[in-house]
Length: 478
Ligand SMILES: [Zn+2]
Ligand SMILES: [Zn+2]
Ligand SMILES: [Zn+2]
Image 1: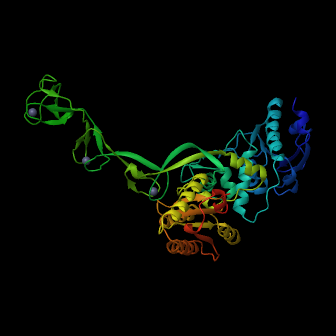
Image 2: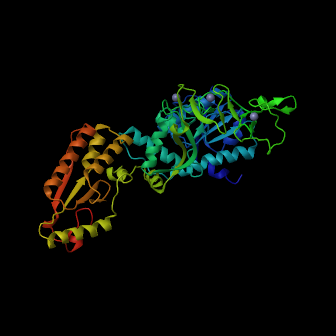
Image 3: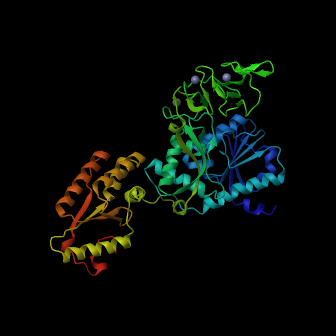
């Protein structure tokens, strides 16, 4: 009873399949809420409500309603309870709570309090930033969903209809993506370090069709037949004959099939080799069978080491993800931040010291040249926003590859801020630096197929004063 007073501040929308009135069996529990009852999923009252209850005496109605609710970005993060007579959430956790009728009053109130706790967190969030980018908006919605449910992460559900044996039902509905596409979207949020993953399972997939239905089976190592049997082996010392026990058995005696002598004493006349597997096709005798994979989806056979391993993960928010949820805006997906994982970057303070040393070298040794390039990806970001392009893993890989091939291991790279980076090309004059710039510019254009100007600044380090550091440090480093 202690929590009843707190529920009165929340508005509750009750979705009822047929009636616009509250069923009697619920009325007693909902009297404290500002209550609205509706029959339609697109009821405007649902958007305004702090919490939603789906009353589903008919189980199919409940499941359909939950899927519809979680498919709509505006409703996705709302606390939703399912009130039903039979347990009905097979793909897992579409509802925040499930109340089975008839319910004990204390249980009913506890479940409502769970929903109120989610609503309470939701009220602390700032209005989300307007964005044209639908995927970005959905990403933010997902972060806010997790923010309001700090105790429950986003977990996968076992799903035998999915090609990878699992799915992320909530993410699948939000992103309107079929497995494993929704997992790829989650991986991207993980790459951006907004969510962090916990490992749930490793699933083996067929290398040809990426399906999980693989039969791991034993075969004869000589002829690859499935047809072999397990039978004790006998080795006759005096003639060297090795065969399955049945070939030696004559009544109760053991007679060698090769030399016809009787085998009397184990350890004296004969022994029993440990290789006890016999191929019915080729007669091979072996200790261990070979394991082969057979894909039940496409019929491909392949050795186990060629199976593709996919990691099945659950997710929780990172501190950066929490901040993004609170502020209602995603951090800028800075180009270099995304590339940080793939190319080596110096920390700015170390870069600053190396910059000082290089400028000093250029002053001290006539003929020694070093160049610094400053690169701004702001133009890139704007081009992305304008064209509706999205960062994809492939694009990122290509960019990382471009940077790797453009710079040598002796070059010194750092990130100045979200969108700018600097690189010192040691032992390099401005001519080669300009050639590097031109190449990057060209490849970036052909990658994005969008016309825009990248901002590059090439600086001859022999022309700058090495001291003091603060004054000579490049823009963005101060
Ligand atoms: Zn064989
Ligand atoms: Zn023999
Ligand atoms: Zn296959």
